[in-house]
Image (cartoon, rainbow, N blue to C red; front, top):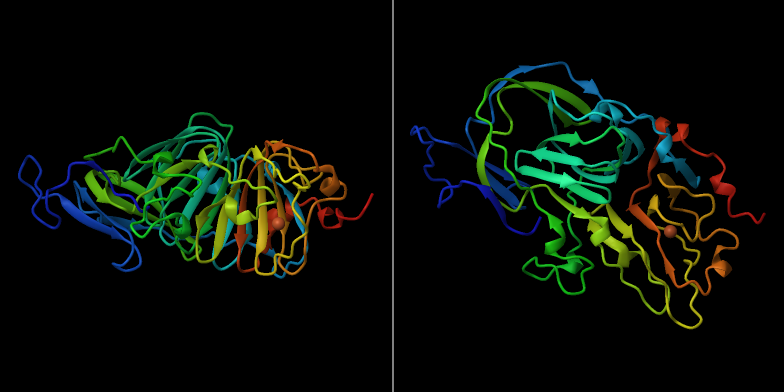
Length: 386
Ligand SMILES: [Fe+2]
């Protein structure tokens, strides 16, 4: 997160004495990435963040792969994923490779009796349905329909929902998720051509500072296992922090589409960047305005990437029989394009109200057992003429 932010109380100089009203020292924690080379923050805790009391037996949460070598285009009915009470139990891995796992989740209940940390993957939550509060050691972020919540690895959080009707797409990334470098200048500031800017971010606010000792359960994901540790102090005991490494939100509705006289390629929709995949936002926009423009996309060979499109809302111009919450997977190795009739049928249309999130991975995705349960099974034949 390349803008500086701070909340609460911090000492004027880092790594110097910072004392509580009773004279005891606060406990400083440097929270950095890529050794000491990446973005970092410095937090000040009431108690050391190290006080482990007990470690329980871990649970294996590795995705169950059903199709390891996939060349089949697929259509997954995302809203067929069953709602479950618990946030972690509700997360169903759908597509996975060694860099990234995509999950669908319909959690009903807020996380109240434990805290959660993904220790080795950034998590990008896309809120398709639901409102609530992401509570973290860095402060809280209110969320609603259309929000991306980017939670860097290592951030301890709880998620609170205002109702039981929630639908999330979760991108769990073993490589860091950044804003695209080409949108930023050499200082890190988002430039004029970027489809969004710093004002659009939802930064953490309302830092919660607990001063409690006792028994606090934390579930920690590491190497495909979910560990349960009990800590002796409340995980949200930070009195202040500053830096660049912290969770933030961004609404897809604040993404300003880039349009042109002829069809613009997917990179104009890019929202996030990693070394292993990109995330793009397809938002309501004016269509191409060349007098002979064809608004529907051309057939294309995604030679280097598997394309995953998650349909959020609106009509999907180039696809038949697609509903909200559906996911299309267009695997690398075979071309894809508009469905029969959609190419010609798009001519003359002026605008679209489609809303979708795309995740294109550079390594092929494996299809899980969960995905096969919601696979329509016939999508790969959908380009045959009726
Ligand atoms: Fe495509």
